[in-house]
Length: 114
Length: 109
Image (cartoon, rainbow over all chains, first blue to last red; front, side, top):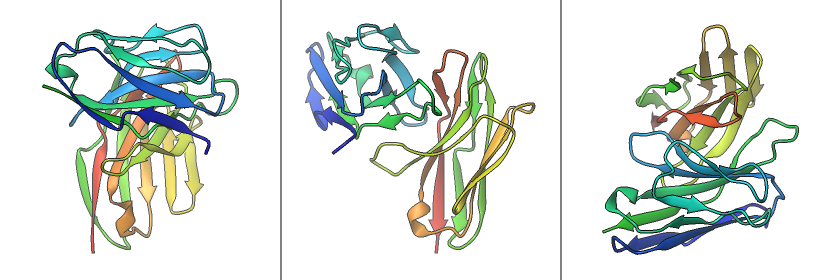
């Protein structure tokens, strides 16, 4: 089934632990994004990648890292989780060559850091 | 700075029409998006406007005025399933989306 998958669906994590959120798309989109969504706030961009092998920082990158070794995968790592990283995390992708740059979203990962 | 403003919550009646407004300020502009997000789910694309005017797609229409930094989403013949949050997002000069906090639409029978 074409689209974006994320894993895990949800996770409870102790503060200080390392965690990697996985994101895979099969649409061969060049650009991928990680957002966090918190109550009362808009989606905030954490990191992005315009093409395999390149990454960039978004609005709220501190405490997070990403890699883009290939077109399909874009994992997000929390090196040492803190309670303020409790949020819903969405991965998205788009094809930026032509078209309207519509972003397609994965189902999200609900992360709780205690 | 970059900013998107939209109402926090709106209430409407099944079968009626509702207009959700959005104003934006961005560094450069490459289009205005509307997304729908049901509770606990991912956002899904509704519309994209880059030129001034109205784009109609079934029961949903979206309008853009670039000179005023203003857009609205118009939903007609409201159905209970339209109860959701509606997210306005503007694409800046770096082709990044700047998101509003969303408008929660409550539909009453």
